[in-house]
Image 1 (cartoon, rainbow, N blue to C red):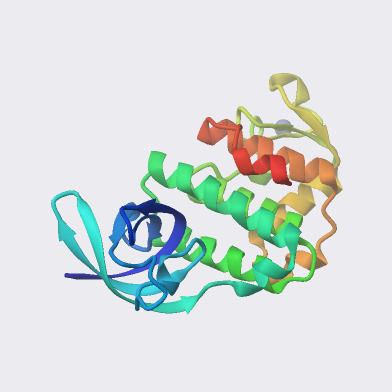
Image 2: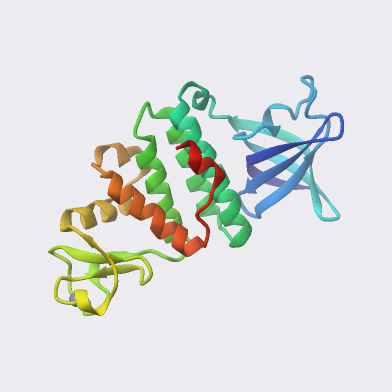
Length: 237
Ligand SMILES: [Zn+2]
């Protein structure tokens, strides 16, 4: 028997009363869990066996499956149901982390950050797209692709002017070194915005002005490194 914190990414109906849950766990990455009887409204596992449920649970390990034996619901981010944009962004976060956690070893920082961004999506009245962009950039950084926005990749000097941002090389080229790398022209202010997003907590993201072009650039950057860009839930956004 093990104790684990889990976030349910997906619930799949199984047999008459059971569910198979795809979950992000705090210390074991992505796992599959059988939740017996959880389709019944009388089940003590019902609330913890739904998408977005965040709970502290006990699991039995049997062969290659985890079996949910008890669960204490910590949050189900109920407010997501009251804001369609928050809900769609949160659905995309679940699909994104489901893929990333399957392909990579993710640590507890990724788990904590995922729970945190969904909590903020559920509590914020707007700024949901910005929260998602911040999550994408921070996720890329946690996976080992943290760009240094403030120093030139080629000469190392401090950035204080317009630059080229290179997705493939994972950083910036200063105005003197633009010919050494491929990239997209970005203003100094846009570089500062991305650096600020990387260093800010989710609760402060609303205070940063983030142009749509920068949100798109962040998404392109993450997708390049995780090797996937066709997430189904993206069509909702
Ligand atoms: Zn340079």
